[in-house]
Amino acid sequence: MVVEVGYAQGWDPEARVAWRPLSEGAARERDAAGLPYVVVYRTAGRDAPLEVRLVSWRDHHVGVWVYDTQGRRTHELDMRLWDDPARLLRLYTVGWDYTDPSMAEFDEACPRITVELFPDGRGRRTEEPKGRGGGARVTVPRIADDERWSDRPAFGEWPLLSAQVHGFARQPVFEVVEAADDSCGPAPATCWRPPRPAQPGPIAALFRPGVRVTDGYHPEMTVVEPRRIGTLRIPSGLLAVSGPDGDGPHLTVPVPPGEYALDEARVRHSYACEWAGGQVTRSDTTAVRLLVKDVPATAWEMGIRPDEDPRLLRENGVFGFDTDGATGCFADAGAWEPLLALFEKGLIQGDPALGQDLYEGIEDSMYLLRTRDRASGGELVAFATAGDGTYPVWVGRSEAGEVVSVVVLVGGTPELLPESGTR
Image (cartoon, rainbow, N blue to C red; front, side, top):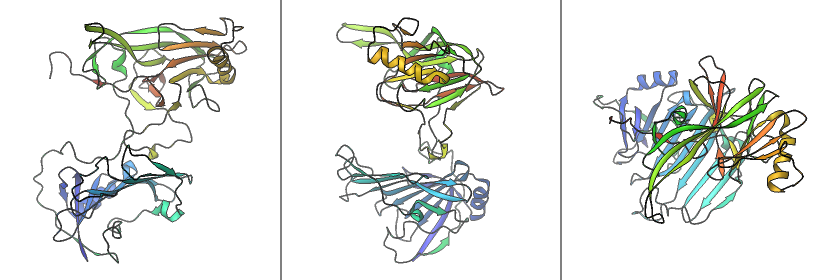
């Protein structure tokens, strides 16, 4: 079996065509430089490709998409480059089992199996025999080490990973095809790009009155003046950001020992209310902020723990604190345990013996309450989130690299709207 091999800068999954074809030499140069490129494998007489490999070493990513004769994606593999030695982790695999030739690609009713693997030996296998919404069975996959890891192949020495899927008894003979003339325009919006973790969005703009944003549900919201709620004492010099549970705080951020302002970013919007019989205007909180230094943040980074590796994040993936009670906390990490004990006594147990110097409720705010550790002077302030789940912590840094603010987007990540008078 002869398989034709073509190279390109990109792949358009909607049109199922390569974008900006490359010669083998040009693709080799991009591979050496770590730049994104794709490899397309085809056989004569078949419109759909057998397999498309999507490579971006600078993003530690190699993807493989396998297609059936109708051009539907049947398997997707996401591998991540791990160093020392250079090898690839099989991070995520999903397979679709189309039950009918007329079933559309990625049909919600299509049975699928997903396998997630991690470098520490953990994993999860999810079977959905009736597709999404039809129930799932989650088990621990039995995966050998050589199935979890593979050596990084040299350029041009990749096997056809989907050979067994296509019924090939042995690896085929590869034949590189000449690149077509590059007459492509700009990359289509649907063109593949390497997976990226979630981005911070317009955090700074959420604290600038007059900026227009949308959360996807409300078409237009206007940022109003941030609300200063008070301050938080962090005498230990280590800020904790976490849900109010677990064994210790989820994340810590070093800051100079001191007392820092707590702010709420807020937006105003109007909507038609059936019960009010007309338009209603209200204000909502989009973010909570601990302001370390009153200077602009020139860069934002997702806060991560030492045991968290960004290479494990898929498209829009996040690391953050988990909550099943729609609550997060800013706190002095040096007094985390006594502060959390006061939180539980006051909010959960309703202990009437707590004085206001140890436990204080906060009204009319996303900030709910404050606790104080008498011995150290450290404080904890709890805030509400829009729901349960995982919330990333965004750390803003100045041009000099200093931490200037720590922000949690409690209502999701809004998008900027064009300024008035522009399109």
